[in-house]
Structure formats: structure tokens, C-alpha cells
Image (cartoon, rainbow, N blue to C red):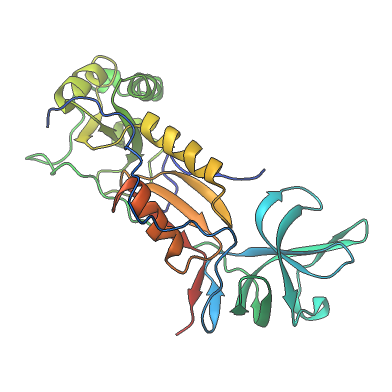
Length: 286
């Protein structure tokens, strides 16, 4: 999910129907488990960073930051040496206390220990990308406010607080009826709520405080499930990880600097296929 929705229960950036509520997905112990790499896997051929990466140089040489970034001026981080780097050619360089750094889109090769740069470009302004979908069918006659007197900003806040306290709460988001980013007017807002268990019971609880548009969808994993898995993944020290947390597809999403599918195989064997999705920043060119 990308875009600027107000969302409850989403990714953590690493800077340093009816049913019963689920427990966290059981960790599997396969007879021949896929090993979690101890280092960031190397890439074959030419690759490009799909998201900007920080390159920093404290005087010992340029370093690409993909883990343990401490944001500030200047940043400190761990990562990999960069070859073919020319500070005079990249533009938009910050300097402080003898350290230089900047954020760039890199193209080159990565063998797991060193990034050999072939092309450096400035990040484009982030485009407005909307891929959110309201999962409930559009009601007959279109989306309508049920009770205008209980459709204020305070009422929406009360609905979110109530939702986050439900035993089967997974996540929530607000949008327009067309799935566009949440409007300023709560009366034009659809509150999408994802729960484990009985959607009707969750809807009844929200309706006690919210008279606006509402979509309640049953999913498999709660926010507590994701919190437990998130902690396990952080403890496992997935190499090159920059973000981890639940997404609106009810999956645990792990963002890493590069994955050659070995991290995804590990996650599939530990949690089952489709529970965890690993997103690699580096992607093949062409």
C-alpha cells in the first residue's frame, strides 16, 4: 500500500464472516529449513535502487547505508563501501564536521560487500501513487453517511480509538468513497476497518460512536499478531532490513536493501507462504 492515508497499524521504520480471534501465526520448524542469510545477498547483473539510499563519507571513503541508520546531521550508518564515487559529480551534497552525505538513486553492481556505481541520479519527487481499494462492495445507491450528527472529526477519532481496542483489531484506514486519500471532511470519509473474528460485532461497536461511512472486513491476522512477528523478525536480524510491519493486505512486510529470494524463502518456511512479503530495494535493470 502506498499513498497518504491515515492508517492505524502499519510499517515500522528501523532508525536505530465469523470466527474466533487468532493467535500469532505459528512458527514452522521444517526438516530442511531455508537458512536466513547472515549478510545482505549479492545481486546478479546491473541493479538500481527503487528507493533513494544514503551515501555517507566520514573521510574513510564513501559508504552506502542500508542498515542501522541513525538519522541526523550528519547521519551514521552501517552498510557497504562504494566504488566509482565522485562527490563533485553527484550534486546535492551536505557537509558537516568533515563528513559528506546525500540521498541518491544508484545504478551499478552489488556483490554483497561492495556497490560499484555506474550511474547516480537525484531522487524524483515522490509521485502520488494510490493503490488502496475499499474491500466492501459499494452499497446500493452509493456510499452514504448514516448519521450526519455523528460524523465529525471527533467522532472519527472516537471510532479509531474504539477500533484499536477491539480484541480482533488488525488495522484501519480512511479514504474517499473512490479509495483516494482521506479527505479533510469526515462526512466524505470511508473508515475501512480490518478485524479477526465477527465483522458484525465490530461494526456494531464502531456504530456506537461513528455515523459516517464504514467498511468492516474480516482478515486472518491481528495487529497483535503482527507485533509479535515483527519482534521475531527484528530479533532474527534480517540483513539489510530498513522497515518491517503489517500492511493493509494483512501481511507482514519486510523491506530490505537486497533479496535474491533467499530471505523470502526463509520467511515462507518460518511463517507459511503469503504471510510475509519481502520487498527488495535493489531491482534488476532491464
